[in-house]
Length: 448
Image (tube, rainbow, N blue to C red; front, side):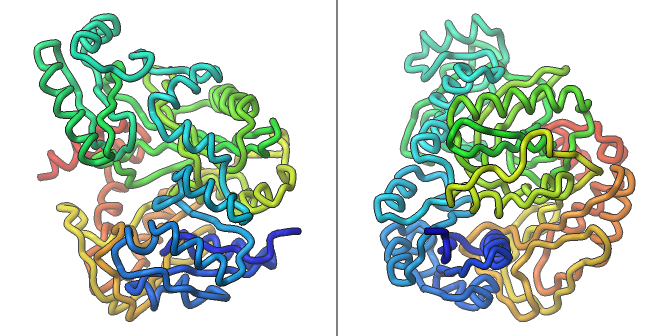
């Protein structure tokens, strides 16, 4: 039986994104929501809505039992997790499938493997992906850590095997600081993720963050849809993303994309995934794989014309990939600005009521957002409230269009990160594409 009703186990703009793709396919949607999100746009537009708990995410959007109950009550035959929350929770995926509901995502075993950074690195190496030099797996003792660090050379990076966002991650410049910083990393990892397992990698001095979008059918076929450059980051959180990367040639793109697609084909990977690399001096180094849709997926859609959410639903429904690698054509340039409800330069959260809202428009301008005038942004969740995605035939035209679109965006009643994006688009390094993952934090320091 084909999918006829999807429960969207998420909120905000991604819940709306999934709802729209489903409706264009003639599929009904079920919105789940906390009491804080009763008036959210994804709830208003869905065909059905079920309240799953109070505002705290742990009691609502992370409450597996309540979400499964909502699926049963609403007779949903599939669940789409979006990104964040339970999207990379292998146990949740297993429970969904055990209840004979279709999981719109990768196989649970692949989510589990790639969610453990040590296991992911091992698997990536076996699949032929280039790795950052480092330990073969978890490092248990300081003696073992010193041995690995001496072999690969300082500086090194101690990283938590679970989680991300910069927690449980320490740069060690020389051996004398290894024991102390490794202990700090383990403590942070334990507190943040309940797991103090760490491993060691070579620390790259000034890399870019480049990731490849892949899709597999779960039966040994996979394609790639090019790369995204996500190097403009603050505290390991992406601020602006673009596709294609300003530093890759078409030859490099197809070579590395082919390596990624081949790896996923060998794995038997199902659905959407992103393989993330650090890139420095023409070399790629695998850092992790996200077994879900990415926040920045619209820039890939803009330059390929492929609806990634529609493709996710089709694959989960047992269909073949809608296109072959030869069908994928890369055209033009796209940039996404993440617009957050926060002070643009101190980054202090700014929840509150939206007094006025006007989305930018015009040719090749897309706004993914659940905002409307009168909506109150709750203080309980991520601060991202909109994504502005702009396309142009060239990078230069894309930037000019993006400047114009940012000037048109009206979000009043709260502070937003729009002024930050406007300033970034005046910086020579951003305009030339000459930036690394350290650039934004260094610029913010000099800006004062």
